[in-house]
Amino acid sequence: MLKCKSKGSVEKDGDFYFNIVAAYNEMKEYSKAVKFYQRAIREYIPRETQSISDALIKLGYCSVNVGDLPSAACSFRLASHSYQKAKKTEDAAMAMREAASYMIRSQKFSKAEVLETLAECAQLCSGITNQDLLPIFSQSCQK
Image (tube, rainbow, N blue to C red; front, side, top):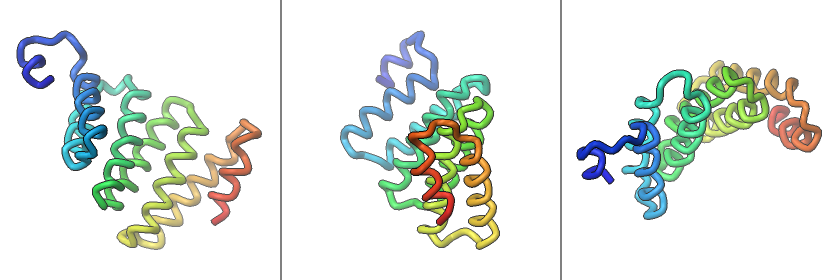
C-alpha cells in the first residue's frame, strides 16, 4: 500500500493511513498500527471530525493492546472532545467514560485529573436522550 501511495494514489492521506492500520490490526501488530493511526489523525483536516474521532477511539484501544494505558486515556479524552464538536453526545460520553476508566487503571493521572474527567462524563451523561443507553452510562458515571 505504501508503494502504491508513492506512485500517486488519489485517496485522501488520512483514509489511506487508516486503511494501512486495518491490515496491522488484523495481524495484531498493534505497535505499528499505533504509528499509522497517529499519521492518519495528523492527515485528516479539522473539519473531518467524524474520521478524527473514530481514529482516536481506535488508537485508544490499540494503545490498550500495547499496554500504554496513559496514551489510551488521552486518546479517548481527545475523541470525546472531538465527538462533542460534532454534537454526538452518546459517543462523547462513551469516549469520556473510557478515558476515565483507563486513567484510573494506569495510575498515572492525578486525582484532580480523574475527577475532572469523571465530572465531564457525568455532564455528558445528562445530555443522553437514548433511553436504552441511559442505564449503561448512569452506572459508569456514578462509579
